[in-house]
Length: 172
Image 1 (tube, rainbow, N blue to C red):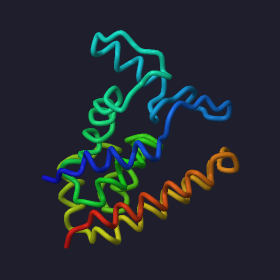
Image 2 (cartoon, helix red, strand yellow):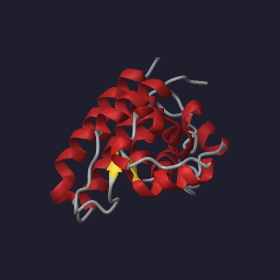
Image 3 (cartoon, rainbow, N blue to C red):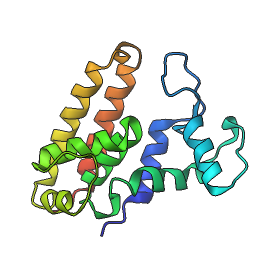
Image 4 (cartoon, helix red, strand yellow):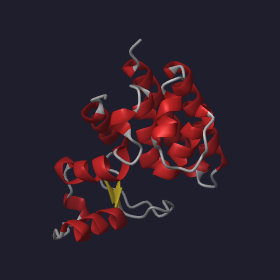
């Protein structure tokens, strides 16, 4: 079992930044990368009173990232480096998409849910090659989006940084 969540969360927060309400962002209002819809749903499930989106702190969003993204992509069970590649893509584009891309690379059924079959296959893969392939698939995905002209530079920077950071987590 790997223990990279804290490091990955720190990198994620650097990527996500603070409060944003860009008119071309289909996610709408976000803070620390969490959309208002996701935050309000989390608060309802936990029976919390939602704060104003501008007031969110890292402590507020950490459990959302852990439960809704890291745990859903089985971050604790993925090899170092692959965990960060999949987690960051899951946050940025959805857990199902990130899981399917990993599954396609691993040659297993791409159902968008990482389970034992996927984990077993991933552990037989070269971690560096997997990180590189996920990087290439992610970049190709971004470049096909209609909002690439607006957000592509930032997505490309993020993808490059994620790749380098992921490679630093690989232990041989």
